[in-house]
Length: 469
Ligand SMILES: [Zn+2]
Image 1: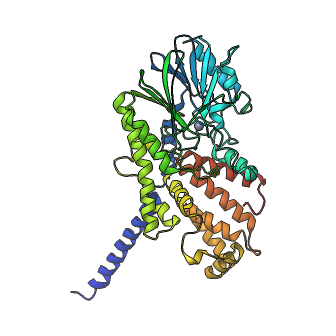
Image 2: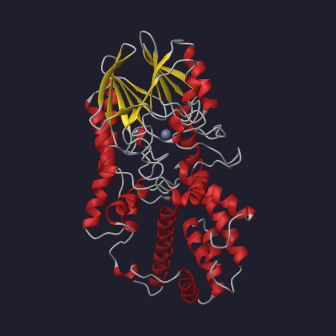
Image 3: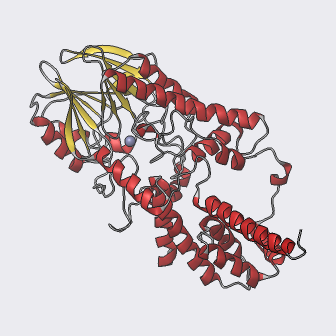
């Protein structure tokens, strides 16, 4: 070997190693972590726009005597036409939206309302009942646990209200708005609950089979998103109304607006029970009905399996000694379910579900003694600055993370910099705002996207205190 060849080879090797390293780095920064919901901005927007057809306004004929109004507000409302009257399932958010749906229904039947059934007590399903009735006094059905999902956590209502606004992007500009994952953006919300009518008939946990207006109907107790939920089965028409335990998106097993633990295992079992009926159509609480026995049954089976799989993987990980941060990055949907249109993470997110299951089963503590008494944020920030060689170098790291589009890291560093007395806090705030917007652009999970954008706007407008920033 020529003496001069070696350095040449070495430089070639070094150049290609660097190129390879850069390639890996690019791949690492470009590819989302497993189970996460970030892709390139164009793809994210295209995906969210493609979900839009799921809540396009209109009345869908599900069976000869069954009609579902989609897109009149966030949730769906349905009408079953019987011999001498109709049954209304869920009533939207308030009288304004419900009046429009009721008018649309009257084009198909003008018969009086004999019964209203609430699938569960969330505000987007119960607030417009009065708009469907005129002089009649219908029976109003709900489970014996109706309302149990509300009323808890009242003590933290102020902060839940703020988080709700962010999750749904209620204050975003038209340019920033996309949708809410399983609901359109920009719903009329001023009349929340004003048309609510209290239940008059209690459905026991064992369920109820009855005939209303000549329609055979079964109400089945189905805890899931809430523990007061039921689903409705029409044995003759073979139509199943799933409430919010099923819709076209990976389910919101945890809501970032802040809710108590949703029993994920119950949820999976309730949807599994629905699949056993092999319905010819399933009407979700949100998004378009799925019609055809094969399609509807497969969707329910897959949905139940997906929830169960996330639960089982999390439990296995917990028992293998893994903590929530690690599991949130590891657990993912099984390969054969990942691309099912009703399991894309537009609304619920697998990583958030994992964290919720962890906390639901074990509480906040991850079992690692390091986290029994972690450093308080300010002390940790000071030590991070020392490690970086001072506040200035730490600030520079934060800025270069942003410049490299390494948004999550930029956020984490800005959260350290904000605690430092000798830091440029205004700069840290600006970096956080820009990083939030950068992350938002990549998100196809609507609650994440809406939350990032809303929080960035709040920071920019100065309405958040130093502690929130
Ligand atoms: Zn809902």
